[in-house]
Image 1 (cartoon, rainbow, N blue to C red):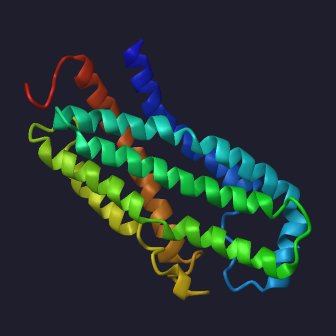
Image 2 (image 1 turned 90 degrees about the horizontal axis):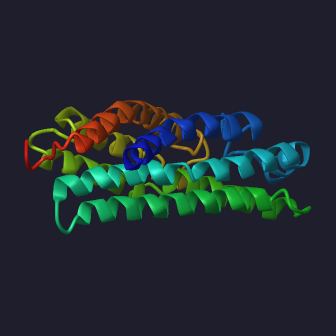
Length: 233
């Protein structure tokens, strides 16, 4: 039963990505993201015309975000196996994951609140700016997660849980995920919240990382229940 729970937790990652893409990108219509250069009246019109669709998509998206809890917990278990007693990296990784998801929920609730009543155009623009800037700029927790996984991978000398190439790849994913760090300085161009560096590269890199993480974690779980540990190999 425990093995089934661990394997199910691994598969919640791709389940999240597919379901969230449908909710956030298709139903809410947030792919591609609206431009930061939209005027207050244009933001107001966007939510006036598509408010019900945006509300439904973001409520579903917030629900689907919870699938990342078991997925990131699966990483914490494997990191803890590598560390042994006092697994501080595992604790940091999961703590960072929780904080990252809290910010995701805040973004969704702000967007949902914008559909709740008729606010003036200036208030709508302010809430929209705040939501998107949080969405792309709260990268430090994400980077911390990737660094924790990478360091654990370097510690796993026998590569029982994380292969060495995967550890290096996690570092690149963390670097790519910080592309929105300076989005507050741009209303257009590659570093804006809808730009190549600010949005698309981090999203694509996360998708690739997630796809590669599934077989890595499945192998790690198989080794775990076969009695193979980093210490014993």
